[in-house]
Length: 115
Length: 113
Image (tube, rainbow over all chains, first blue to last red):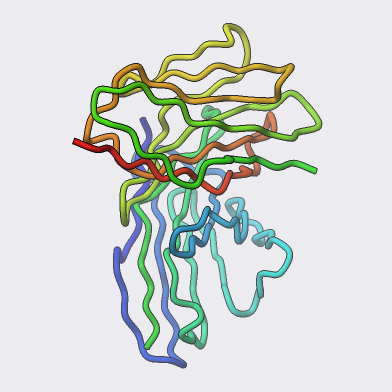
């Protein structure tokens, strides 16, 4: 199957700083990428959907200015958590799909801890 | 509205015993259905998926699931559970263009020796 990577796997930052998380499709062209947030012992919550070269579509209740998503190429999408606060601490998971695929491929996730 | 319900938050089974994880969905059109497994601190791995055809689908690691349209269910089964199956399992539904996935709340599986 297709492989999706995320970097970093873990990040700890101070409150008020910004953190960038990368999501890469390693062996296919990801026309669409998704960003999810997962709270402890809960399900995945879709934050936004991004198509290559287009602005991301955010789910209701997700702050666009807080969670900046860029999908500049067919293999890379980034999520930037701006002015992070402790309540932004969570597990962030990306997924990707391409034109010839009928499923999403998930990255391993990034654990963000904001002190 | 689209939704996925996994009624069981936690399930504990003995190693070697059979397993069934329940999933019910609400979806306006023909659903595409998925089961994923997540180990602690990891991403999601696809176990199996159903799009059409035979309502009993086989997946990896010995798992299978049966689509029952009349019951709006897509339950996951395994005849004999292994200790390595302990993880969290998520059921999901998606539209035909896979532009959005709706996940259930998950079922955490514990396996007793």
